[in-house]
Amino acid sequence: MPALVIAEHDNASVRGATLNTVAAALQCDADVHVLIAGANAGAAAAAAAQIAGVKRVLHADGEQFAHGLAENVAAQVLAIASDYSHILFPATAAGKNVAPRVAAKLDVGQISDITKVISADTFERPIYAGNAIATVQSLDAKKVITVRTTGFDAAAASGGSASVDTLSPVADSQKSAFVGSEIAKNDRPELTAAKIIVSGGRAMGSSDKFTAVLTPLADKLGAALGASRAAVDAGYAPNDWQVGQTGKIVAPQLYIACGISGAIQHLAGMKDSKVIVAINKDAEAPIFSVADYGLAQDLFEAVPELTALI
Amino acid sequence: MKILVPVKRVVDYNVKVRVKTDGTGVDIANVKMSMNPFDEIAVEEAVRLKEKGVATEVIAVSCGVQQCQETLRTAMAIGADRSVLVQTDAELQPLAVAKLLKALIDKEQPGLVILGKQAIDDDCNQTGQMLAALADLPQATFASKVEVADGSAQVTREVDGGLENLRMKLPAIVTTDLRLNEPRYVTLPNIMKAKKKTMDIFKPEDLGVDIKAHLKTLKVSEPPKRSAGIKVPDVATLVAKLKNEAKVI
Image 1 (cartoon, rainbow over the protein chains, first blue to last red):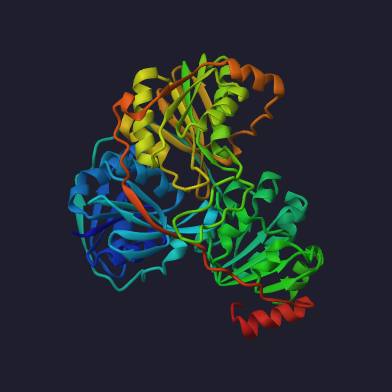
Image 2: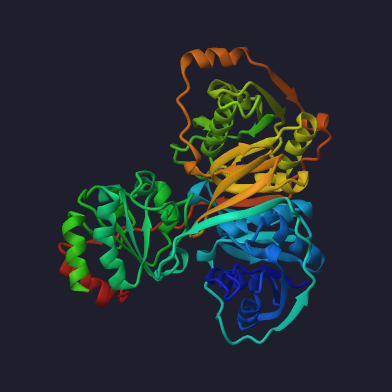
């Protein structure tokens, strides 16, 4: 039976996390389908059809999917679940919200946050904030999975030519209603998809200094901005910038940690980055034990100098 | 309105766990155990709702070994009125816990169930959503603000890119994120009071729930180690290394 990927999208395009999830799905089964549940999401469905390796796109459209309410999206997945051996979601806020609802209704266990597919029923996943890796085997006929996107190289966004089939949408559950959202608008790359991340810790000292010192460097590198939990809790940076086990898990080409001590919680979220740079005036900070390049210097001098030199 | 708050006993968040040399799991013999931090936030939120007069009774629930009684005493010291332990020595996976909690929802008929978004041991992030599905209730996961009025809840959720607000009719399931509140310190008089509060103990079979495992752990291993690189003396050297050696800028 084929594998189904629940796409993360904004109705106009498919988000990067979907591509990594398709890559994981292709390791479970060669026949991969993608579900787009959205509102006026024809463009997203067309984009999904271009993803390399995808055989078929299923498009369910309706206002009830406009805000990705878990009750409605889960119902749409369940409507077609019987055709699939594997149902995969990206382990994003949206995917984590919906996947367990689907698993429970199917009476199957969920395999969360997989980082490796060993066989069609056996997977690796981190536990204890990444301090241990468990190899788990599903005992169910159907596998409901969330995929840690940093564990899989993205499938190519183009080169595929899947058919797009329209599904009849499930009715609105009317259990919950979307009231509004405050989504920060900026031109920066998404934290989990960025090639370069500039991240600040408690040593930034204030929200103003965080912005004044790190923004120019991020601008120059075309980087996303991140923060440690300490910096977020202190109010220096917004919640959704938090990198760490309980925040975002990232694996960019280059991660520049400024004034971050390197708590286990934070390291769990960024230690798979290709190159890690640490700038911290405390030469004993644990962050240096994972950094490829460490600079034991005051960040308020080093970061502006770095910005000027690149 | 009753609020049900499930709590899990886990390895304390300050403990660095060690993988057993035989690869069967992590060593939890003689390590400090505590209430899962996200669950502590859930208990605090429920108790605050009671203090505001929104809720009438807060019931803490735990599923697991006999020692979970300590975790429930902590929940009652924070302010839960009574507690329920579903006691078993069997390994409980999230679907089994969700089924046990569903049975307790049927019994207690709470207006709200507040759970931690994930446990810091298995990092599954499943139980709340599974419970919502089994009980056929609306859900608001990763909550950073919860307001309850006129039989409905308005919840602010932490999502990728920012915040989202949902409104739902009660009963509903809420899971907590880190910034929902800061749990109070438990005081000695409250610990003493908690000892006198009621704790009911059931077995899974009393609730008619099948707790079989759906996943089998074949092996637990150490994550690949990342070794420390080099220290650079100044910014100019750093830039040169990034350009010529790492080739990332």
